[in-house]
Length: 291
Image (cartoon, rainbow, N blue to C red):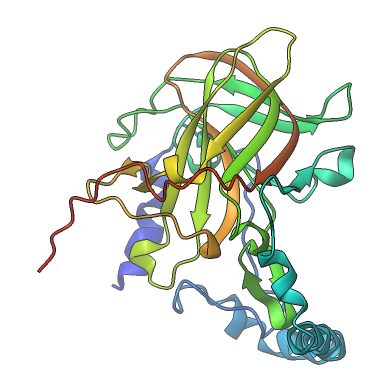
C-alpha cells in the first residue's frame, strides 16, 4: 500500500472531534500554474482536457500582459522605483471598503484542525480593514497537538503574465514599514513571507512584534526592516540572515499571544518609508559558521 493511501486511510482517526466549517481545495486554473507540491496534486492530470482549453482561451490575454512588461523593461520604467530620496513615503495598501480586503487570505487554527479559534476580516464603521475574532487556547485531544491559538491574515499574491507569482517590487529601496492601526492592547506579529525555491525553505519568514495600545486612539508604528528577525515555521532561527527586500512575496499579521479571548485590530494603511539616516542593515548577530 502506498504512503498516500495509508495517509488517506488514517485521516479519519487523526482528528475526529474537530472538523472545519468549510474545506477548500486548491485547483490549478490552467497549464501556466506551477505545481509546488511536485506531483502530489493530481487535479491537472485528471482534468487535462479542461486545462488545455482554459489555457488556449487565456493565451491572448497573457501575451498582452507579457508585451506590456517588455515595454516597461525596454523603457527602463522599472528604474523609477529605485530613485527614492529621503522621506519618500509610499502606500502598499490603503484600506477603504469591501473591495480593498476581498483578496486577502484569512486563516485560523480551526482551518487546519489544530484548534477552535475563529477570525474575520471585515470593514469597520470607519471604512477601514477590521481583523477580529476569538482566540481559543483549548488544545485538540488528538495526541499530536501541544498548543493552540492563532489567527492570521495575509496580503494578496501578485501575479504577472503566464501566472507567474511576483514579489512585492516596490519596497527594495525603503528602510521602514509603517502601519496606522487601532488595536486592543494585545501584541501582534508582522510577517514578511519570502519567495523560496526549495520546499525546506517555503516557510521562511521575517517577523517583528506590533504592540498595540488599546483604547479609542490610533497609533502609527514605524518599524525598521533591519529589526525583522528570521524564522521558519514559527521558530526563530539561531543563524540570523539579513532581510532581502527584493524577495518578499506577502505581508501578513498574526495574533498568537497565548491569551484566551476576543481580539480586534483596525488597520488604516500599510506603507513603506525611506529614511536616509537609518544605516543599520540588520540588528542581529550572525552565528553561522564561516570557513
